[in-house]
Amino acid sequence: MVTLILVRHGRSTANTAGVLAGWTPGVHLDERGSAQAAALPARIADVPLAAAVSSPLERCEQTLRPLLDARPGLELRTDERIGECHYGDWSGRKLKELADEPLMEVVQQHPSAAVFPGGESMRAMQARAVDAVRDWNARVAEAHGEDATYVMCSHGDIIKALVADALGMHLDLFQRIHVEPCSVTAIRYTRTRPFLLRLGDTGDFGSLAPRGNAGDGTAVVGGGAGAP
Image (cartoon, rainbow, N blue to C red; front, side, top):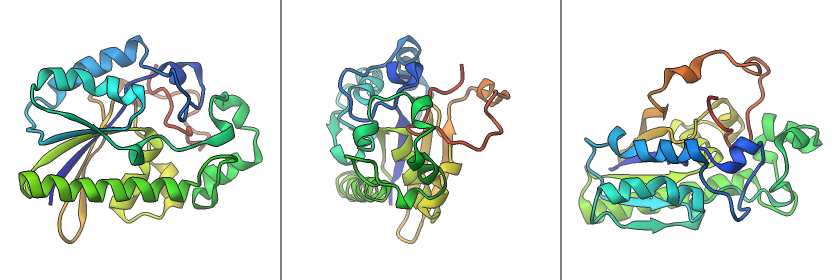
């Protein structure tokens, strides 16, 4: 059908502060995140784009702005269904503090059963994001043809959930996936199955260097700040 380029937003002020942002207002790209966004147009310069879709949150729109500036005529559309997970009462709290919450074990090991207090379930998060992608696939294919490619800027947990769906993985396995800030993930959708073409590609192999928590088996809720 079409090819979807998923971009996680650049590093944000919440990422560097170790805070689970969710839909908390006032979260924007930090200096490094802005540099990551500025480099994005060159990274995908050879790819024709039929459309650009973003989460309505500021950090995603900021990430796509340099790309839009480099491609006059590419209009930005927003879709709340690819907005960050509604973490409810967890929003705005430190990740280190949340690590002690009993629910965190469920989020890590059995996310399909996780429901954030005052927020949404991770199953609902995945369902709305998958529905959004299916809708946009159809819209882009109808307007631009079956070989069209479009870009969508979203958030770590949303992208991981979309990759799990594309691979036919149960949501309970999605914490095994990792996507860095401003990484590119590409999925080609055909009539019979999706194909994962790229996963979390930043072009920066320095992020593969060992880090202190590399072996503890814990996934960073919300996606984390990426390489130092």
